[in-house]
Length: 349
Ligand code: ASP
Image (cartoon, rainbow, N blue to C red; front, top):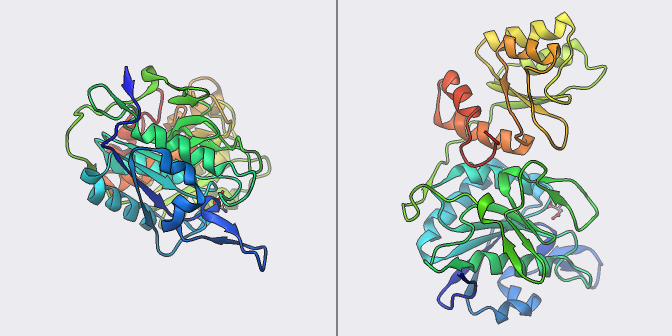
Protein backbone atom coordinates (compact mmCIF):
# COMPACT_ATOMS: atom_id res chain seq x y z
CA UNK A 1 0.00 0.00 0.00
CA UNK A 2 1.33 3.36 -0.93
CA UNK A 3 0.59 6.97 -0.46
CA UNK A 4 2.16 8.65 -3.48
CA UNK A 5 0.96 12.17 -2.66
CA UNK A 6 2.32 12.64 0.80
CA UNK A 7 1.18 16.19 1.60
CA UNK A 8 4.11 17.06 3.76
CA UNK A 9 6.77 16.25 1.19
CA UNK A 10 9.21 18.54 -0.54
CA UNK A 11 11.26 17.96 -3.68
CA UNK A 12 14.34 19.78 -4.91
CA UNK A 13 14.70 20.18 -8.68
CA UNK A 14 18.33 20.71 -9.57
CA UNK A 15 18.77 22.12 -13.05
CA UNK A 16 22.29 21.55 -14.37
CA UNK A 17 21.66 22.38 -18.03
CA UNK A 18 20.57 20.55 -21.16
CA UNK A 19 17.67 20.68 -23.56
CA UNK A 20 14.89 20.32 -21.01
CA UNK A 21 15.40 23.82 -19.58
CA UNK A 22 15.49 25.61 -22.89
CA UNK A 23 13.13 27.47 -25.10
CA UNK A 24 13.31 29.15 -28.44
CA UNK A 25 14.44 32.71 -28.53
CA UNK A 26 11.61 34.35 -30.54
CA UNK A 27 14.08 36.68 -32.27
CA UNK A 28 16.86 34.28 -33.24
CA UNK A 29 14.99 30.93 -33.05
CA UNK A 30 18.06 29.58 -31.23
CA UNK A 31 17.57 27.44 -28.13
CA UNK A 32 18.43 29.38 -24.99
CA UNK A 33 18.06 28.40 -21.32
CA UNK A 34 15.07 29.97 -19.55
CA UNK A 35 15.14 31.20 -15.96
CA UNK A 36 14.63 27.92 -14.18
CA UNK A 37 13.26 29.58 -11.04
CA UNK A 38 10.23 30.18 -13.30
CA UNK A 39 9.79 26.46 -13.97
CA UNK A 40 6.24 26.54 -12.56
CA UNK A 41 5.29 28.97 -15.32
CA UNK A 42 6.77 26.70 -17.96
CA UNK A 43 5.29 23.52 -16.48
CA UNK A 44 2.13 24.63 -14.63
CA UNK A 45 1.21 20.95 -14.20
CA UNK A 46 3.74 20.89 -11.35
CA UNK A 47 1.39 23.11 -9.31
CA UNK A 48 -1.00 20.19 -9.03
CA UNK A 49 1.39 18.33 -6.77
CA UNK A 50 0.66 18.90 -3.13
CA UNK A 51 4.38 18.59 -2.43
CA UNK A 52 6.49 21.70 -2.22
CA UNK A 53 8.76 21.95 -5.24
CA UNK A 54 11.86 24.10 -4.93
CA UNK A 55 14.50 24.59 -7.56
CA UNK A 56 18.24 25.14 -7.62
CA UNK A 57 20.02 26.19 -10.79
CA UNK A 58 23.65 25.44 -11.50
CA UNK A 59 25.79 28.41 -12.37
CA UNK A 60 27.02 28.19 -15.05
CA UNK A 61 24.55 25.91 -16.81
CA UNK A 62 26.27 23.32 -18.91
CA UNK A 63 25.57 21.28 -21.97
CA UNK A 64 26.16 17.79 -20.63
CA UNK A 65 28.98 17.22 -23.11
CA UNK A 66 30.95 19.52 -20.81
CA UNK A 67 30.27 17.55 -17.63
CA UNK A 68 33.34 17.08 -15.47
CA UNK A 69 33.79 15.05 -12.27
CA UNK A 70 33.97 18.37 -10.37
CA UNK A 71 30.31 18.84 -11.32
CA UNK A 72 29.48 15.45 -9.77
CA UNK A 73 31.23 16.55 -6.58
CA UNK A 74 29.17 19.75 -6.54
CA UNK A 75 26.01 17.71 -7.05
CA UNK A 76 26.86 15.22 -4.30
CA UNK A 77 27.66 18.04 -1.88
CA UNK A 78 24.45 19.86 -2.74
CA UNK A 79 22.38 16.71 -2.14
CA UNK A 80 24.19 16.11 1.16
CA UNK A 81 23.66 19.71 2.31
CA UNK A 82 19.95 19.63 1.43
CA UNK A 83 19.36 16.00 2.35
CA UNK A 84 17.39 16.61 5.54
CA UNK A 85 15.22 19.34 4.01
CA UNK A 86 13.87 17.33 1.07
CA UNK A 87 12.17 13.99 0.49
CA UNK A 88 13.65 13.49 -2.94
CA UNK A 89 15.83 15.08 -5.59
CA UNK A 90 15.37 15.47 -9.34
CA UNK A 91 18.46 16.26 -11.37
CA UNK A 92 17.64 17.85 -14.73
CA UNK A 93 20.56 17.05 -16.95
CA UNK A 94 21.42 16.86 -20.64
CA UNK A 95 20.86 13.41 -22.04
CA UNK A 96 24.24 13.03 -23.71
CA UNK A 97 26.19 12.17 -20.56
CA UNK A 98 23.30 11.54 -18.18
CA UNK A 99 24.18 7.84 -17.78
CA UNK A 100 27.77 8.76 -16.82
CA UNK A 101 26.59 11.25 -14.20
CA UNK A 102 23.93 8.92 -12.76
CA UNK A 103 26.49 6.09 -12.58
CA UNK A 104 29.06 8.24 -10.82
CA UNK A 105 26.52 9.61 -8.34
CA UNK A 106 25.33 6.09 -7.52
CA UNK A 107 28.80 5.36 -6.15
CA UNK A 108 29.37 8.76 -4.59
CA UNK A 109 26.14 8.69 -2.55
CA UNK A 110 26.42 6.00 0.08
CA UNK A 111 23.54 4.75 2.20
CA UNK A 112 21.02 6.69 0.12
CA UNK A 113 17.52 6.51 1.60
CA UNK A 114 15.79 8.93 -0.82
CA UNK A 115 15.15 9.10 -4.55
CA UNK A 116 17.69 10.90 -6.72
CA UNK A 117 16.18 10.85 -10.21
CA UNK A 118 17.97 12.14 -13.28
CA UNK A 119 15.79 13.22 -16.15
CA UNK A 120 15.87 15.48 -19.17
CA UNK A 121 14.33 15.57 -22.59
CA UNK A 122 14.96 15.32 -26.28
CA UNK A 123 12.82 18.40 -27.03
CA UNK A 124 12.89 21.57 -24.90
CA UNK A 125 10.15 21.91 -22.32
CA UNK A 126 9.09 25.11 -24.07
CA UNK A 127 8.33 23.36 -27.35
CA UNK A 128 4.91 22.04 -28.31
CA UNK A 129 5.77 18.35 -28.64
CA UNK A 130 8.16 18.26 -25.73
CA UNK A 131 8.82 15.01 -23.89
CA UNK A 132 10.19 17.06 -21.02
CA UNK A 133 6.89 17.70 -19.24
CA UNK A 134 5.94 14.04 -19.05
CA UNK A 135 9.44 13.09 -17.93
CA UNK A 136 9.54 15.77 -15.27
CA UNK A 137 6.01 15.27 -13.92
CA UNK A 138 6.43 11.48 -13.64
CA UNK A 139 9.86 11.88 -12.04
CA UNK A 140 8.34 14.19 -9.42
CA UNK A 141 5.57 11.70 -8.75
CA UNK A 142 8.09 8.90 -8.25
CA UNK A 143 10.39 11.04 -6.11
CA UNK A 144 7.50 11.89 -3.78
CA UNK A 145 6.21 8.32 -3.58
CA UNK A 146 6.51 6.75 -0.16
CA UNK A 147 5.42 3.47 1.30
CA UNK A 148 3.14 3.30 4.32
CA UNK A 149 6.14 3.39 6.64
CA UNK A 150 6.98 6.78 5.16
CA UNK A 151 10.08 5.61 3.32
CA UNK A 152 10.95 6.44 -0.29
CA UNK A 153 9.76 3.69 -2.61
CA UNK A 154 12.85 4.03 -4.81
CA UNK A 155 15.83 5.07 -2.65
CA UNK A 156 18.26 4.88 -5.56
CA UNK A 157 20.05 7.04 -8.10
CA UNK A 158 17.96 6.42 -11.19
CA UNK A 159 17.11 7.76 -14.63
CA UNK A 160 13.52 8.41 -15.65
CA UNK A 161 12.95 8.64 -19.38
CA UNK A 162 10.07 7.87 -21.70
CA UNK A 163 7.93 6.12 -19.06
CA UNK A 164 10.72 4.01 -17.62
CA UNK A 165 12.60 4.32 -14.36
CA UNK A 166 16.01 2.68 -14.70
CA UNK A 167 18.82 2.18 -12.23
CA UNK A 168 21.32 4.94 -13.01
CA UNK A 169 24.37 2.72 -13.21
CA UNK A 170 22.59 0.27 -15.54
CA UNK A 171 21.25 2.77 -18.05
CA UNK A 172 22.80 3.85 -21.31
CA UNK A 173 21.77 6.30 -24.00
CA UNK A 174 20.84 4.31 -27.10
CA UNK A 175 19.07 6.78 -29.36
CA UNK A 176 19.97 10.35 -30.25
CA UNK A 177 16.65 11.26 -31.87
CA UNK A 178 13.84 9.15 -30.42
CA UNK A 179 12.03 9.94 -27.16
CA UNK A 180 12.90 6.36 -26.21
CA UNK A 181 16.50 7.40 -25.64
CA UNK A 182 17.64 5.17 -22.78
CA UNK A 183 17.79 1.46 -22.07
CA UNK A 184 18.74 -0.69 -19.13
CA UNK A 185 19.77 -3.74 -21.14
CA UNK A 186 21.03 -5.95 -18.32
CA UNK A 187 18.70 -5.08 -15.46
CA UNK A 188 14.92 -4.74 -15.17
CA UNK A 189 13.33 -1.33 -14.93
CA UNK A 190 12.65 -0.14 -11.38
CA UNK A 191 9.25 1.26 -12.36
CA UNK A 192 7.10 1.71 -15.44
CA UNK A 193 4.76 4.65 -15.87
CA UNK A 194 1.58 3.78 -17.71
CA UNK A 195 -1.91 4.60 -16.50
CA UNK A 196 -0.49 3.73 -13.09
CA UNK A 197 3.11 3.79 -12.01
CA UNK A 198 4.11 0.19 -11.42
CA UNK A 199 7.04 -0.25 -9.06
CA UNK A 200 9.08 -3.41 -9.39
CA UNK A 201 9.94 -3.88 -5.74
CA UNK A 202 12.01 -7.01 -6.37
CA UNK A 203 14.39 -4.95 -8.54
CA UNK A 204 14.74 -1.96 -6.20
CA UNK A 205 17.78 -1.77 -3.96
CA UNK A 206 17.28 -0.65 -0.35
CA UNK A 207 20.21 0.56 1.76
CA UNK A 208 21.25 -1.76 4.60
CA UNK A 209 20.56 0.97 7.19
CA UNK A 210 17.40 2.74 6.04
CA UNK A 211 17.63 5.80 8.23
CA UNK A 212 21.39 5.92 8.49
CA UNK A 213 23.14 9.15 7.54
CA UNK A 214 23.93 9.80 3.89
CA UNK A 215 27.64 9.57 3.30
CA UNK A 216 29.26 11.11 0.25
CA UNK A 217 32.52 10.14 -1.46
CA UNK A 218 34.05 13.01 -3.32
CA UNK A 219 37.61 11.89 -3.96
CA UNK A 220 37.60 10.65 -7.53
CA UNK A 221 40.68 9.38 -9.33
CA UNK A 222 40.15 9.95 -13.04
CA UNK A 223 43.32 8.32 -14.38
CA UNK A 224 41.29 5.95 -16.55
CA UNK A 225 41.41 5.35 -20.30
CA UNK A 226 38.87 3.46 -22.41
CA UNK A 227 40.18 1.32 -25.26
CA UNK A 228 37.57 0.04 -27.69
CA UNK A 229 38.90 -2.86 -29.72
CA UNK A 230 38.26 -2.92 -33.44
CA UNK A 231 39.64 -4.81 -36.40
CA UNK A 232 42.71 -2.98 -37.59
CA UNK A 233 43.68 -1.50 -34.24
CA UNK A 234 47.40 -0.84 -34.36
CA UNK A 235 50.05 -1.93 -31.94
CA UNK A 236 50.95 1.71 -31.39
CA UNK A 237 47.42 2.67 -30.36
CA UNK A 238 47.15 -0.31 -27.98
CA UNK A 239 50.56 0.48 -26.50
CA UNK A 240 49.81 4.20 -26.10
CA UNK A 241 46.68 3.45 -24.10
CA UNK A 242 47.56 0.31 -22.16
CA UNK A 243 51.03 1.52 -21.24
CA UNK A 244 50.35 5.24 -21.34
CA UNK A 245 51.97 7.50 -18.78
CA UNK A 246 49.57 8.64 -16.07
CA UNK A 247 47.06 5.86 -16.76
CA UNK A 248 46.15 3.81 -13.66
CA UNK A 249 43.30 1.81 -15.17
CA UNK A 250 42.08 0.86 -18.63
CA UNK A 251 38.55 -0.17 -19.49
CA UNK A 252 38.96 -2.60 -22.35
CA UNK A 253 35.82 -2.72 -24.50
CA UNK A 254 36.08 -6.20 -25.95
CA UNK A 255 34.04 -8.25 -28.40
CA UNK A 256 31.10 -10.47 -27.44
CA UNK A 257 31.59 -12.30 -24.18
CA UNK A 258 34.92 -10.62 -23.46
CA UNK A 259 37.09 -11.69 -26.36
CA UNK A 260 40.10 -9.83 -27.67
CA UNK A 261 42.71 -10.08 -30.38
CA UNK A 262 44.79 -13.24 -29.90
CA UNK A 263 47.88 -11.92 -31.67
CA UNK A 264 50.99 -12.18 -29.47
CA UNK A 265 51.81 -8.46 -29.80
CA UNK A 266 48.45 -7.53 -28.28
CA UNK A 267 48.60 -10.04 -25.44
CA UNK A 268 52.17 -9.01 -24.67
CA UNK A 269 51.06 -5.39 -24.25
CA UNK A 270 48.16 -6.45 -22.02
CA UNK A 271 50.52 -8.59 -19.91
CA UNK A 272 53.07 -5.78 -19.65
CA UNK A 273 50.36 -3.34 -18.64
CA UNK A 274 48.93 -5.69 -15.97
CA UNK A 275 52.42 -6.55 -14.72
CA UNK A 276 53.14 -2.82 -14.31
CA UNK A 277 50.30 -2.78 -11.75
CA UNK A 278 47.71 -1.10 -13.97
CA UNK A 279 44.10 -2.19 -13.57
CA UNK A 280 42.53 -3.58 -16.76
CA UNK A 281 38.78 -4.08 -16.69
CA UNK A 282 37.05 -6.07 -19.42
CA UNK A 283 33.57 -4.92 -20.48
CA UNK A 284 31.75 -5.97 -23.61
CA UNK A 285 30.99 -3.73 -26.59
CA UNK A 286 27.64 -5.50 -26.87
CA UNK A 287 24.64 -3.60 -25.61
CA UNK A 288 23.47 -6.55 -23.51
CA UNK A 289 24.96 -9.69 -22.02
CA UNK A 290 28.05 -10.28 -19.97
CA UNK A 291 31.77 -10.90 -20.09
CA UNK A 292 32.82 -14.47 -19.44
CA UNK A 293 36.54 -14.86 -19.94
CA UNK A 294 36.36 -18.61 -19.47
CA UNK A 295 34.37 -19.16 -22.66
CA UNK A 296 36.91 -18.74 -25.49
CA UNK A 297 40.69 -19.02 -25.69
CA UNK A 298 40.93 -15.32 -26.61
CA UNK A 299 39.08 -14.37 -23.40
CA UNK A 300 41.00 -16.86 -21.28
CA UNK A 301 44.29 -15.31 -22.39
CA UNK A 302 43.12 -11.98 -20.97
CA UNK A 303 42.11 -13.64 -17.73
CA UNK A 304 45.54 -15.29 -17.46
CA UNK A 305 47.18 -11.92 -18.07
CA UNK A 306 45.44 -10.49 -14.99
CA UNK A 307 42.51 -8.67 -16.60
CA UNK A 308 39.45 -8.25 -14.36
CA UNK A 309 36.09 -9.39 -15.79
CA UNK A 310 33.43 -6.68 -15.74
CA UNK A 311 30.52 -9.15 -16.02
CA UNK A 312 27.52 -7.14 -17.28
CA UNK A 313 28.53 -3.62 -16.26
CA UNK A 314 27.96 -0.80 -18.71
CA UNK A 315 30.98 1.27 -19.70
CA UNK A 316 29.40 4.22 -17.88
CA UNK A 317 28.95 2.13 -14.73
CA UNK A 318 32.51 0.81 -14.97
CA UNK A 319 33.93 4.32 -15.33
CA UNK A 320 32.05 5.68 -12.31
CA UNK A 321 33.01 2.64 -10.25
CA UNK A 322 36.70 3.00 -11.14
CA UNK A 323 36.78 6.75 -10.41
CA UNK A 324 35.18 6.09 -7.03
CA UNK A 325 37.22 3.01 -6.03
CA UNK A 326 40.52 4.50 -7.16
CA UNK A 327 39.73 7.67 -5.22
CA UNK A 328 39.05 5.60 -2.11
CA UNK A 329 41.94 3.12 -2.31
CA UNK A 330 45.54 3.55 -3.35
CA UNK A 331 46.06 -0.23 -3.45
CA UNK A 332 45.26 -1.48 -6.97
CA UNK A 333 44.76 -5.05 -5.76
CA UNK A 334 42.01 -3.84 -3.42
CA UNK A 335 40.41 -1.91 -6.29
CA UNK A 336 40.50 -5.02 -8.49
CA UNK A 337 38.89 -7.15 -5.80
CA UNK A 338 36.07 -4.61 -5.33
CA UNK A 339 35.55 -4.14 -9.08
CA UNK A 340 34.33 -7.70 -9.32
CA UNK A 341 31.86 -7.20 -6.43
CA UNK A 342 28.38 -5.75 -6.54
CA UNK A 343 28.50 -2.42 -4.67
CA UNK A 344 25.44 -0.46 -5.86
CA UNK A 345 23.55 -2.93 -7.99
CA UNK A 346 25.77 -2.16 -10.99
CA UNK A 347 26.74 -5.77 -11.69
CA UNK A 348 24.74 -9.03 -11.63
CA UNK A 349 26.88 -10.93 -9.15
N1 ASP B 1 23.45 18.39 -25.81
C1 ASP B 1 22.41 18.26 -24.82
C2 ASP B 1 23.05 17.79 -23.53
O1 ASP B 1 23.30 16.65 -23.35
C3 ASP B 1 21.37 17.31 -25.27
C4 ASP B 1 20.28 17.07 -24.25
O2 ASP B 1 20.05 17.83 -23.35
O3 ASP B 1 19.62 16.07 -24.40
O4 ASP B 1 23.28 18.61 -22.70
